[in-house]
Length: 212
Image (cartoon, rainbow, N blue to C red; front, side, top):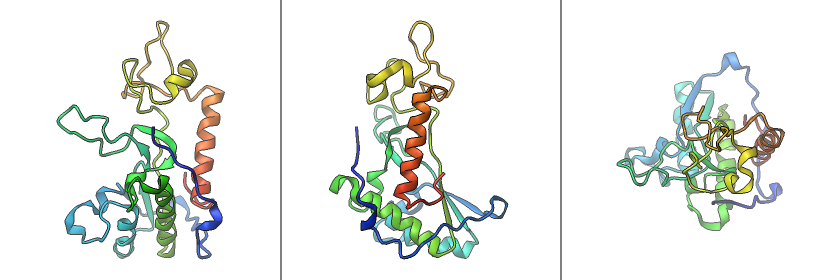
């Protein structure tokens, strides 16, 4: 299971940045897969498929009239979830493993440096977007996790407290209301607290920005 230790917030220079706080009705939203946005060679970026690569294309979005980027899942997920199938890789990121970590493989340094580079590059993306008048919001996934159904891998919650974190049928099988093998038990107070803690940390990583 991937994880990271956040850097002290004082080590990142926000350069006086503040949230833009647009009204929702005024948003012109561009939905972005952070890796896919610059992964292809035609993007001509120095660091394709990364937070920094996306920064280099923010002026392009501004020219389009975009004032808000909605990031598809950027929390740590299992890229090899579908490795046994013809698709080989989970590209989209909708099966989260670590809800408290920006995706380390979207960093220009990859998984090096315990994920610290990912945190700082994620912050850099937000800061540079704000400089161009572009707000950043995040798509987060809390209706299911990467652990799949009752036959799936034990990655975290199943081994900690299966019946608290997942909605279980009388015989112990997982209710699959999400269509992804399991359903996160968001009605449970422990799980609700977990979700709030996660969102609070993401806001801190973004410097108390509008992350959700």
